[in-house]
Length: 316
Image 1: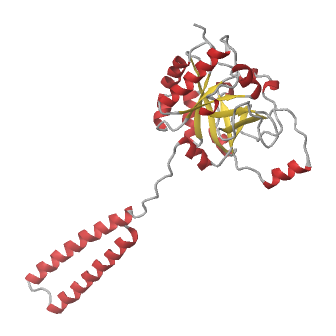
Image 2 (image 1 turned 180 degrees about the vertical axis):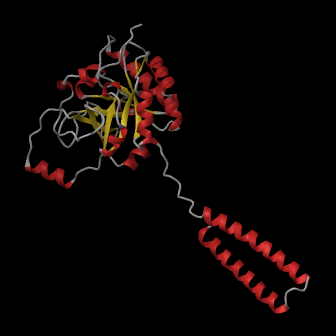
Image 3 (image 1 turned 90 degrees about the horizontal axis):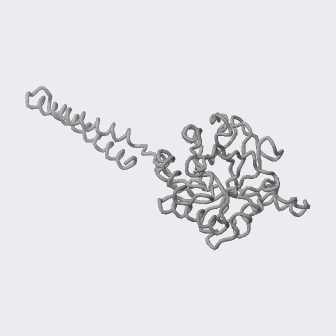
């Protein structure tokens, strides 16, 4: 069995991820100004980024992070547990990725991924995307590579997760081609460009490709700045934070039960009223109150009962 020390993403060649230059025109500039899509900032990281300061990352305006967890069938990213826990602690939405090695079948790679992300999956109730990072040729033919990638992704779905893959146009075409199941899963494209839209691999669609790695900070001038992560890949999610959470299956938080304290106060008042009424009964029996005193006190108690009833209608 070949053991890898973890694929170094900075070995990637720019030519495989940079998009062709597009001719600027007044027309395209105006279209961009008039119809700028909503998108939110994200990064993807691994142990190659060192110890990420997630507080600084969050302060940089980053809302989501795609974090390396595993690779092949034997490599666990040494920063995985720290990264996902700290990112979640800083209210950054997390999805994990597995670096796909085509010289292993999909099922054992998925088993390795699931075993090492178990705590994370429990912490988010499985509301995530299990990404497969597809960018290297480890010696299998294209048919075997397709079947193994399909095995990983469909296996993740069978476990109740969402799944998808990361690649660029050139990498996807050379490594995977355009299988019939391409759009059964989510897509995360690497298209390093300052253009307003990414270049997608053949067969990919804007419906499935909501994640776009568009450069590296500070390598490319168009990349937004991120503090706390060193040299880091920057990404867009095509949508709002709530739309990302909706995609992951997070339901809207329940409305705050603002009347909990009111209910507790009403219960306290009920107890006090019962006590007072009991005391009144005792006083009455001992003839320590006049008839007029009792009438007035009973009127007060009735008024309190009416007030509490109105409060219940409003708050509960």
